[in-house]
Image 1: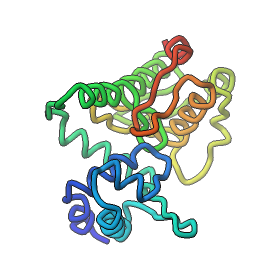
Image 2 (image 1 turned 90 degrees about the vertical axis):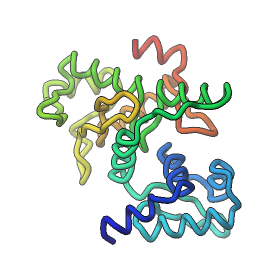
Image 3 (image 1 turned 45 degrees about the vertical axis):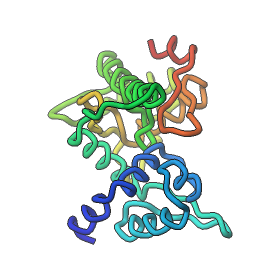
Image 4 (image 1 turned 180 degrees about the vertical axis):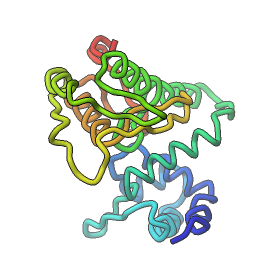
Length: 218
């Protein structure tokens, strides 16, 4: 699969919308995904097949039920960066659309980590406390800060080993600044969801910040 094939898969508006919905992170049933983007299930199946061939999504089959998710965190970060290039100039029509866009701006999941104003603000706070270091557009975590993550979030950065980088700067398409991604970013979002600081919405990748979350996140 080369860049032209990937670009062709992204060129269709319906497929682009499906990928935006999958940026929430958790897999979505094909039928629910079709309903979200406003197409027939058979049409959604055709689009998902093209996205799967392009390596952008994976399809998990559970009997007759099919669930789609983004193929990797790298796909999510590429989509977020493309969203930044596309901008956010379209004016929403209707109160529901206005509220939906405002919610995405405030807090949303970018595959498996926190994005939007809340994600950027959290990143800024971590940098201010010396728990995250930014250098030439890249993030790193000093070992001296590991105890902060253990005490504050119940996360041991030393255990987050694998193929993913511990900390990665991801371009935020609404804030035009980086937020924290990588294994640590994913663990932080999981921790905040478990603690009840954030809750997922059933119909969007926007996240609700609870009263406790606003207090804890400042």
